[in-house]
Amino acid sequence: MSVVKINVLSVPVEQRETLEKRFASRAHAVEGSDGFEWFELLRPVEGTDSYLVYTRWRDEESFQAWMEGPMKSAHQGGAQESGDRPRPAASGATLWSFEVAQQAAPKDA
Image (cartoon, rainbow, N blue to C red; front, top):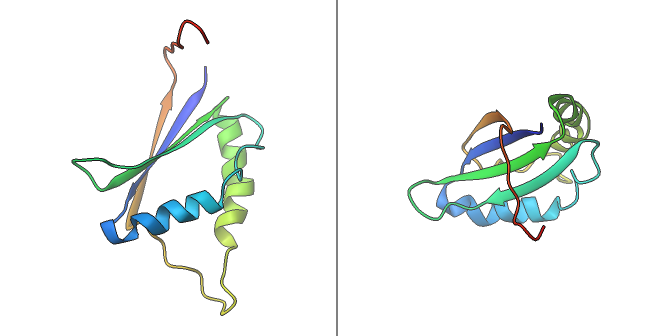
């Protein structure tokens, strides 16, 4: 079964727009990765300031290969012309890992 990785990002209210713009500008950055199955950026509605970055992978090995390759490269790059990297929009991050134990889809899918 697939594995799910949820990156929990603590994002101050004043940085929400910045975070969402950065994710929008990276659109399609992960979709071509071997073993990638799904991505969602979940915006908090109430009760938390944490965004959830949900990704689903065929297996742990696929996720690790992406982490050590394309993701690592993307986060090491992106420096501005002045040589300074933009400040992170999130003030903290935690990675949750899950295995899919059961799943269901709509009957028509």
